[in-house]
Length: 83
Image (cartoon, rainbow, N blue to C red):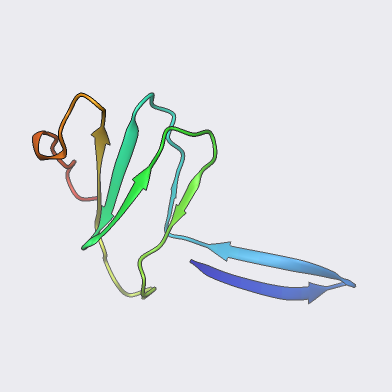
């Protein structure tokens, strides 16, 4: 995630960048993966801001997501197509 703070007319302007903003509105937890970095996204109302460790604007890093439930083992669930 990139964070930039500027002063603007005696106040602060905060600029926040993350390539993936995920709001989980399902009733399930999610697994999110970029390359080999995996993030667990619980079923909560707040958005998750996800960014690879190294931000490269020329990079075409693809992500995947899958649904996780208590009844299903991770080995039985499939990742979606990369996006």
